Image (tube, rainbow, N blue to C red):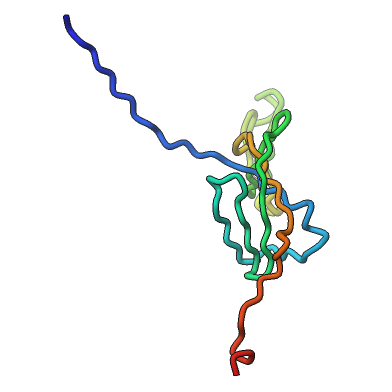
Length: 135
């Protein structure tokens, strides 16, 4: 009797999560370029620390319906010539108009299944000691 053995490789698949900051966006100023540290993604309550000042606690929720993430790219303005070839020498030709500014093109990037909703931690204001306080 011959034994067949199949080897299964575990492929790492990327999993995307939507970070929902709606409940804290009115309470704290969240600059677009703020430094942040996100830890504990494999726990029930991940932590997000923003600008070494604010500590947020997250909780996972399953998305209801379809939740998509999109990418945005610059795209040149393209004109497609149509009409019969007798009238138009450039029939079915696409011409790039360099005189116009590029437009934004949005494409689906991935489907999200989890939403990570954040709220302020009771000890959200993280206090760091400065050199003046040490003196």
